[in-house]
Image 1: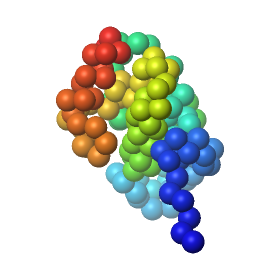
Image 2: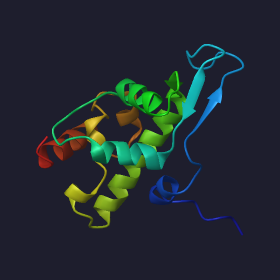
Image 3: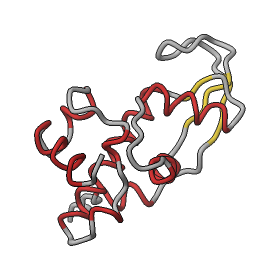
Amino acid sequence: MAARKKTWREKRDTGKAPHVTVLEKAFAGVPAGCRLLISSPQEIDRFLRAMPKGTRGTPAELREALARRHQADATCPVSTGIFLRIVAEAALEDLAAGVALEEISPFWRVVAADSPTAKKLSISAEELESLRRLAGE
């Protein structure tokens, strides 16, 4: 029997803790020898929830802030993009399950409607902007 596919919420709530590794070779625009943070969906979720209402940032600013927090030179752009999508889709699952908008992770603070991440989401750019407006942001 095939294993059941994990929900986005399960993907958000499980996984490894953030950790820093030293790159042996260049990766995703980060040079060899740099200390690279591999974050986690849970850490990105906490970061977004801690952002003041009405503020906006970019994935690059998110990565920079997380790298500083962990005394790393950079945060992995590849895994951060994946984790940001996991957090966004989990928030959408929560919303569909009846969780109040104020209680879900405010991913729209970092995911712009015209961004590559937004294009991968299960909602349209218009629906993303609608969520932002409903949240008063």
